[in-house]
Image 1 (cartoon, rainbow, N blue to C red):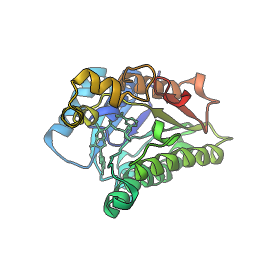
Image 2 (spheres, rainbow, N blue to C red):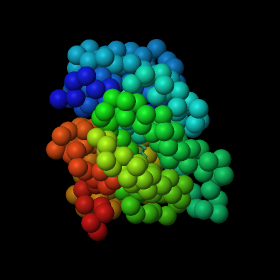
Image 3 (cartoon, rainbow, N blue to C red):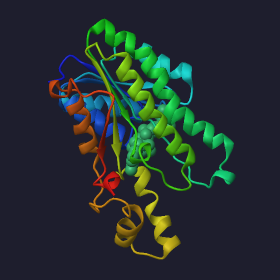
Image 4 (tube, rainbow, N blue to C red):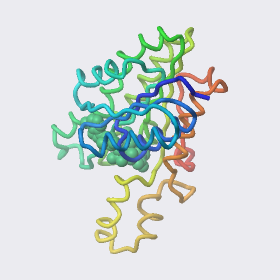
Length: 256
Ligand code: NAD
């Protein structure tokens, strides 16, 4: 059980981050939710999650595109036994047309934030004598697709940094690993389906099978519960010697 541990999950008011928060809370961890907004519904989301699982849950606003806010999130949490770097955005365009500000934002949110949060959290983990860094990378941390230069660069960067953190903590009771999901049906992915149906003049099932899941041999989406369950496993005693590596949850994508 993760009772008594505190998990900070970046970008967790929707999608995978929220799913991971639910699974960690179900396993007994107190959780800190985060995004860059500060709405009533963000705080209510944390309140409801805490009630559902009988744990302490808070929401802390911090913009993961800004290094000082990444560090402030961890400082405000006060304790961080489990750090889940999940905040991420996407933009799709060929390299020669890729807007420089989109490149900078993706590198900042999808990669640099993990450096800043880890830098702030590792001293807390050392003090507590236990820690887990779980970075939500992607199949695109291990392979590439056209038009996703910033995303692929950032996710490969996260995988590399995960290995370095693992080496720097190798003799301590701290591990660092990256989960590499294939396609997960989050609101982010769901919102792309209607446009893609129009673009290709296809029905929903065909778009899902032949466009979204073209490279996912299982022809099924991974679920946020499965990503969360993988995070819980990485926090278990069984995973104490698993460090500096990646776990793919991608229906066979990276086996192709
Ligand atoms: P999502 O859009 O549902 O969630 C992204 C989260 O990040 C949201 O909570 C959003 O509020 C937050 N966020 C965005 N910008 C932020 C910022 N500047 N500061 C703080 N929070 C911010 O998307 P998702 O599909 O759940 O993606 C979550 C992570 O999983 C991302 O890192 C993504 O790259 C990765 N991933 C997703 C898939 C997939 O198929 N959905 C596959 C592989 C990897």
